[in-house]
Image (cartoon, rainbow, N blue to C red; front, side, top):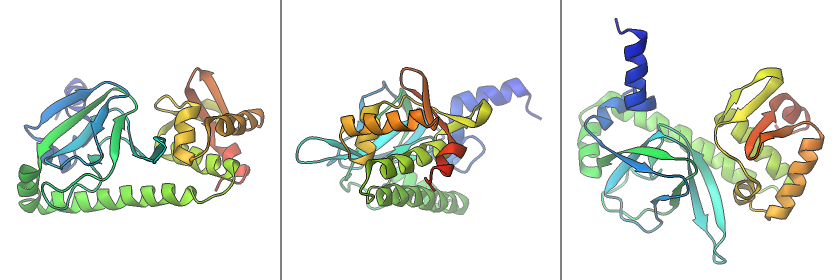
Amino acid sequence: MLTRHVCILIVMLFGSVFGTPLAKLVSEARIKRYPKNQMLLYGGDRIIDLYILKKGVAKMYDIDQKGNEKVLHILKPPCILPLTAFGTSGQTNEWFYGAITDCEVYSVSYDEAERRVAADCKLAAYLMRHSASEMHELLIRVSSLGKSDAQGKLAQVLTFLAVRHASERHGGWRRVSFPVGHQLLADMIGMTRESTALGMKRLREHNIIRYPRATQLEIHFRHLVAAGAS
C-alpha cells in the first residue's frame, strides 16, 4: 500500500492524470512550462503535439476584427489542448489558447498519442467521455452569450465559475481558483469592461459576489441561484 507521503509526491509529479487512463497517455511525455499571460497555442498553428494540462488554468478564445478577445472557455487539468485535437495529424488549430495562471502541460506527439489510444480501449473510452464533457460545458458557455442583458450574461458566467472552477468556503461562499478581473469577465460575456464593472458592483451590493483581495473572486452560490441565475 502506498503511504500518504508517496501518494502526495505522485500527485505532485503527475497532477490530476494520476489514477486515470490519461496516465498512460502522458507516460514519458515532455513537460512544458508557461508563465501566466503567455500563449500556449495560436490560431492557425498546425497540430503536431497534443497538450494535456497538468497544472494551472488556461483560456480558449477567438479574436474579432477589432482585436478584441472573445473568451469561449476556461480550461483546467486534465484538459487536452486543443479541444479539437483528435482529427487528423497536421490539421490547423482554430482557436487561441493562453495561460491565465502559470501553467504546466504534458506534450505528446500526435502520432504517439494516436498509437497509444488505438492500443488501449479504456484510454479511448476515457477520452471520449472527457471530450463530451468539455464540449457540453463549451456549448453551455456559448449559449449563455445569446443573452441580451449584461446581468443575465454575468449570472451565467458566475454560475459557470462557481460550479467548475471554485472551492467551497465558509458561509456559503465559493472561491474561484484563479484571478478574475473585470476585463476577463468582459471578454467572457462579450460586453465592455465598464458595463461589466457596473454589473459586478450591483451584484456586490446584493451580497452575491465579493473580492476579499484584488482579483480574488468569491461567489455566494445560494444567493446567485436565488437571484435567478439558474
